[in-house]
Amino acid sequence: GKFVIEEIMQHGLPEHRRLVLGALSDHLVQNARHQHASFLVQRALRLDDEAWVSGMVDVLLRHRETVLSLVRNQYGWYVVKELLQNKMHAPKVRAVLLPLAGELQCSKQGKKLLANLLLV
Image 1 (cartoon, rainbow, N blue to C red):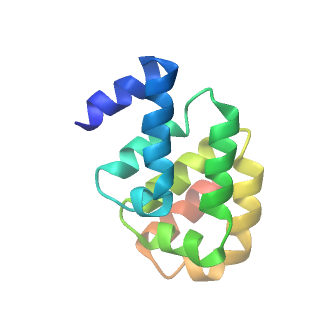
Image 2 (spheres, rainbow, N blue to C red):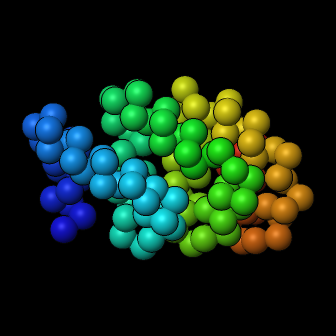
């Protein structure tokens, strides 16, 4: 299923892409923490639709507790890592994560993310 949805996001008709992206964004934070949906959120962050990607970044980084919940989640931290690797959004991600460094040290995923943060 997720590979079919990924193909639609990458190669589907615009109206089909909008439906998939809309479904992902309806529960974006929950999807980012879900075992299978987090993969799709990561792929959506790589799309050329800058307006949608920027909106998604804003939602994911808007609240401190949301960011911490993503980093502490075994699937959500991959989404944050993907955000950090996006050249356009990396400065904003760094600005959100650096003040949380002390709290990030408390989890395995947070430590990995801090290591990646220092490499960027």
